[in-house]
Amino acid sequence: MLDAAFKALAQMFTAPMRTVLLKSAGLAVALLVVLAIAFYRLLAWLSGAGQHWAEGALGTIAHGPLVLLGWLVAFALGFGLVAGAVLLMPAVTALVASFFTDEIAEKVEQAHYPLDPPGVALSLPRAILEGVQTAALAIVVYLCCVPFLFAGFGAVLFFLATAYLLGRIYFDLAAMRFHPVAEVKALRRVNRATIFVAGMFIAAFVSIPIVNLATPLFGTAFMVHMHKRLTRARRPELLGPARGGS
Image (cartoon, rainbow, N blue to C red; front, side, top):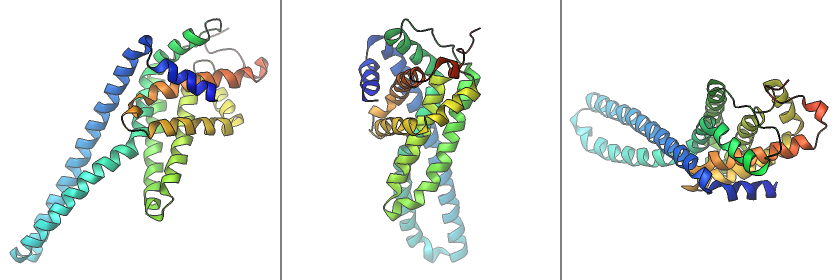
């Protein structure tokens, strides 16, 4: 597993990967900006409407305290945007990965497994569907983890949830190039402990600010290596033919 991680890291910044890195990082930043603007405008509208309502109900005598409260809300909004970006980054990078998984996987397979049969590219709608489903599930899970942040162990829950979700999506995207969906799910169940630990590597990577913009490259390349190791450890007849094969 460490060997797979080091190989993924070493290939990330090679010349063939630089274009994909720039495209995936740019898309991740764009998505975060759009989400941040939408979130800010929603909360700003709610706080403004709430202040006007409070002034109407309490009278002008409450104007001073309400202005102070407005400043506090503005500060909370700024903090919320930063915290929201941290919480949303794993979900955003999982969605971004669905757009570039085949381009990344092909480069890894060509560089490290040139003698193996190449994988079959996923259809873009299928890849995006997988990314959207995982991103939506991630947001729901993270919202469930937020209350526990104040209990002291929310960060641990967040990390473990991220490891599970990212391990799952990146393994599926890598494995679907070679196996039908049902077979991928069966393979993931058999190797769930290994894939979860592998997901911890990706979760650790996505927790590093700025560097985490390259998570789609690292996660995809890492899981391409992991998929190769896991399938070679099993008998070929249990795996079936590659997707698109005879």
